Length: 120
Image (cartoon, rainbow, N blue to C red; front, side, top):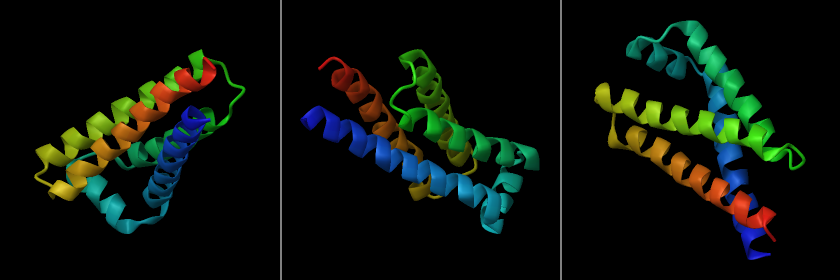
């Protein structure tokens, strides 16, 4: 029961963060400007928002095979590490650099407890 709570808690928090992030990518002019300042093309922001929503769906559907979920975990991991690098290189505030690591910690917790939860 403890493993299930940790798994769904970390996965749920991560999912909420990713959906909120994706929605900001689509609607928040400050986020759009941030992508422009980094030098990313506008379509990348949209693609990333769509990918985050797909990733959340993949992580939240319990019946999907582990191999499919692994793609979601890998994609989010690459995204979080890349976000940290982009914020670091652009001398963004520490708070902006910290959030990808918080998300990565939730992602790792979710992945570890996915396996622990499935083995019970």
